[in-house]
Image 1 (tube, rainbow, N blue to C red):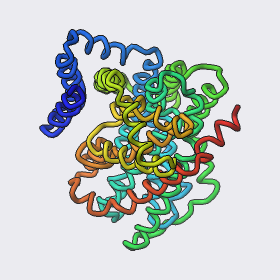
Image 2 (image 1 turned 180 degrees about the vertical axis):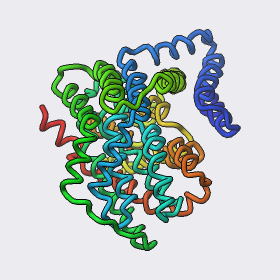
Image 3 (image 1 turned 30 degrees about the vertical axis):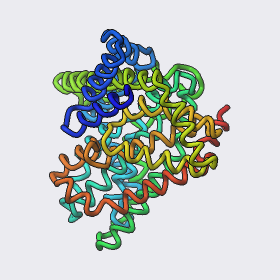
Length: 426
């Protein structure tokens, strides 16, 4: 009965268009009242869901990303990417992917990536004769690379949801090869679509121009090494690295590029506060929802049900991927991680799947979900920047969506793609 109330209330609220945080909180409250427990339990669990020291990394990484957007770092990264790959077929599409990879290695946010790189690249692509749907599809799919490579704050959320027993440093390292594989797949797809549509090739500017662009973008690129190297070596924690990222981004924007003024700093601060408030509310309510599922032993029932279907890990992982892709169509990334991790992690452990490997699978699934309606937040941002409807974009999304799913399958069934690099650093 309680499970029917929990999932039934949640489904109804989702269908009527209520914000996801309220869907999670109200369905948890309705279930607690059905069980005869005091309502304060829900608020205690919401507070518990947000009250983790590692969560401090999230607002600081968000703030660092906002400072980078307003401080000129994103523009320099785009210029460097253009010098590297702008001469290839569909050059600006290739630039978009490489720039998103570089910026994602600094911001760790798909939405920030789509907003910053999309805001710079989509208008340029349109002026150069690229169709809007192509520009938006390249942008929104490239943005999810940021979720895979450090400093992805979603890796931190997964580590917390897993009970703090999965190393953030290992997760940061595990996502690098899958992230680069996704970038390569999207570049190949962008090239193929550009060739099919007849988009032109550019001219290589020369090694000297690449060197100059690298030198100009180097202060921003150094942040990638500072964050990853510091966390991986144990010099500082992921939370401490987020504070260092803010200080470094502010110094670069103020004293190196000199593009951050007081109004820009205030806008970045307010933007980070608003985003953090929304993210933490979702995380807190998702924590209450997840606690109820654990209390009602959903995980145990799911393990039993899947073992009844098959004892083959290949089949189980395929079923989990399908379920996560479907879940991603109507649930945003943070609540999906908070809810799915405590439910599915015991399942995959029962089938001897490494928790770090599963973390990469889960985050890539959730990232693909960010580009699928009706709750695809990155897709919405890309369409807003590109001034195009979701319906128009969905007509031609399939090559890029297919490339992302292909990478998901490779990451799922070749664990070494995720686990080799963390093992090499130990």
